[in-house]
Image (cartoon, rainbow, N blue to C red):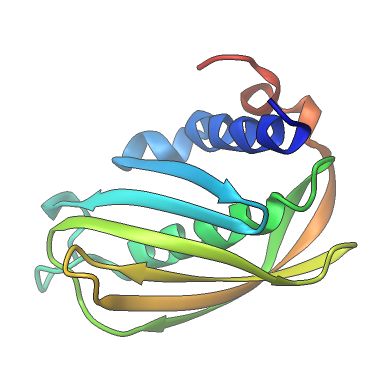
Length: 150
């Protein structure tokens, strides 16, 4: 396995180890440098009072997909979201949704990435752009990143 592949698999483990992700039926796949995909299932448990997915679901999945796309380029440090712009396109009620993240620019201190949410019919339901800053937290210090297994 190449160094990049090792880094990508470690990022996937890191995503899976985050306690917040035990609340969501989701999985991360790093596709290549600057590209990440999160698949998740929208259920009634994530609905707002009017019977569709709450905006927190949109934000979480868009932010995570953009974050991990950007963190493919930072092999030593954990990134932090410094801003995120979100646009809701269409409500979603239930089913499989995919967040596709893509790095746009920056490689040193600040990185920019975007993500889009697509429903089971292939229609875009949301979009976002974020800026991410290198933190002082070494990726190798995070148990989810450095462990060889789940």
